[in-house]
Image 1 (cartoon, protein in one colour):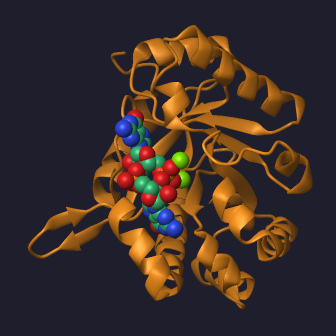
Image 2 (cartoon, protein in one colour; image 1 turned 90 degrees about the vertical axis):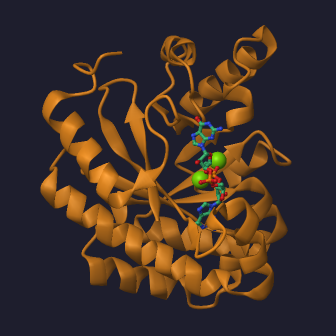
Image 3 (spheres, helix red, strand yellow; image 1 turned 135 degrees about the vertical axis):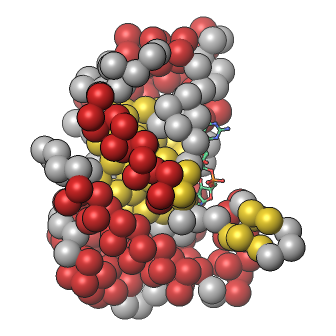
Length: 247
Ligand code: C2E
Ligand code: MG
Ligand code: MG
């Protein structure tokens, strides 16, 4: 499991991490989730893999919360695939994992794409409500790339919108920066947090700060790295702060 930090533009501190799975193949090296997650969905292996990711991510987050206390505590975001909505005991298993790892529900955020919701509308509605009842936050991943019906923002208990990288990476065009501005404004009006994904340049950070975007995630701040490397990075930033960082 690799981790990528999510940074607050207000405090310049890490608010938490997204857990991103990697497959270390003995011959082919590291295989991207873009390649094997669709296969895992087809074969049903996504169910055990998803539970493994969740347990490992919650365990790791708990360790970092202890070592690097903050208020609110560091959070962990875990991707949930549409197929997992169909797992009958998903909510019970999530509850078990929280108890087992000692992580507070409020420190966990589940990331779901619009397409995953649409493809499983009934089960998604139920699962999202149950997550909310447990106190787990929900974010809408890759926002703007799916069928983007704005009615979901009202219909589902969503806490966070993640603006897709495709909009962020083209923010130098006036049209795209207007789209980003509109999403940030919309999120603000609805009382949702907003994260810009795929931030790669300082220019983007300056623009996003100007738009009052809450949080950023991207290669400029850190690529996804393994737990050990992330621990070192947290330690470095925890002591010196990101502001003290050159750049
Ligand atoms: P995602 O959830 O939207 O994750 C963000 C992806 O963008 C990650 O790719 C991340 O490495 C990449 N990224 C982050 N910042 C930048 C940047 O500045 N520039 C560029 N070019 N890319 C950036 P990754 O790790 O390859 O994951 C791809 C997708 O695979 C994820 O998209 C997610 O949908 C899925 N995935 C990853 N881990 C899991 C998992 O544990 N479970 C499930 N169900 N899906 C997962
Ligand atoms: Mg995600
Ligand atoms: Mg995304």
